[in-house]
Amino acid sequence: DTAVSQTPKYLVTQMGNDKSIKCEQNLGHDTMYWYKQDSKKFLKIMFSYNNKELIINETVPNRFSPKSPDKAHLNLHINSLELGDSAVYFCASSPIRVNYGYTFGSGTRLTVV
Amino acid sequence: AQSVTQPDIHITVSEGASLELRCNYSYGATPYLFWYVQSPGQGLQLLLKYFSGDTLVQGIKGFEAEFKRSQSSFNLRKPSVHWSDAAEYFCAVGAYNTDKLIFGTGTRLQVFP
Image 1: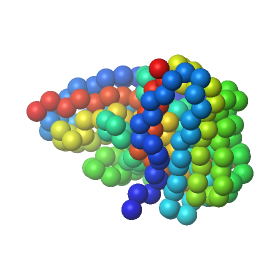
Image 2: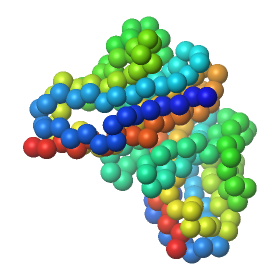
Image 3: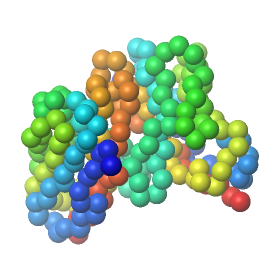
Image 4: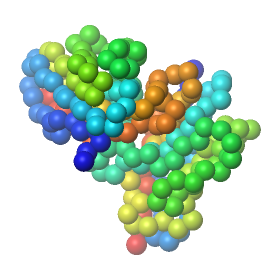
């Protein structure tokens, strides 16, 4: 029973392509997040949704568009992929805001060539 | 602005030795503090967290951390390290009125037999 699952685990694609990463949580949490981990392991928040409503949108290029069809799902669509988008993308969820800490997915390693 | 500093990029210890990983934070209000561990190719797992109360908190896998407000620190400790503890460790800070965690840059722990 995976609590936060992401697909795919690995994604290799060419520059200029459009790709999506899917995330699902079965914990009943209200809040979901996307974090980006760069090659130096630095983690930075990209987006946060609470019960399908966008509550955090950090300074992320508008080529990145999150979508939350329901509170158990948060997908990330990326248009016109660039080399600098190569990173590991983590989905996470929490019961209510940050108070209880996050439960992370295992990550999606995106490589743009 | 919130920030987290992990001064040690890489630490090497012998199996059975004690461990202390340093974390300093900068935050104007009462912080929520977390330690996460990331094994290679995996997501982040919550080790322990501090909200209030007893400044010494116990976590999973035999880890503990002590909150010292006067030093703005939340150092992670373990009395006897096991080879399976080799991983990347992240300190993070949040607050009751925010939906995001700010992560440190991580400390890579290597354990020698």
